[in-house]
Length: 171
Image (cartoon, rainbow, N blue to C red; front, side, top):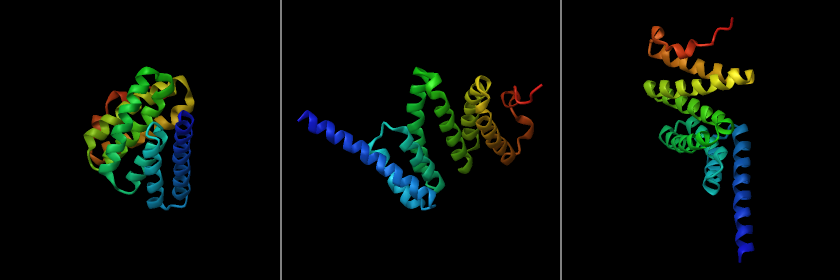
């Protein structure tokens, strides 16, 4: 009986992986409706695999299903924050990525103060990562660019907080 349960659990994880891979194929073919279907199934079959939920949330955003995307990102952020608190070196980069993505989602939905808050938190993490390893600088620049977009849309050019500029220009 225990062996049967173990086999079935393994099969569920394989099924989730297969749905995720099918989703990636459809994503590459710009068939987002089918990609979304497979990413959703993958995240339901293996909710502990955050890669599946992230792909689902990102595709929801690209399909303009913002309410569902926000729900998925909120779930992701809750788990990523706990993981990053327990083991920052292993999980902070993923937390920063999700903060960046939710900041972009809030910008798309014109929730600019929430976008700014998420992007500033992502910048704090990505700046720390970039100081330790310059390979993270492109990710930092990407998030800074998105924050600049928020300030441009809200016409708040003179209100850019010092954290944005700190260490940005090299000597």
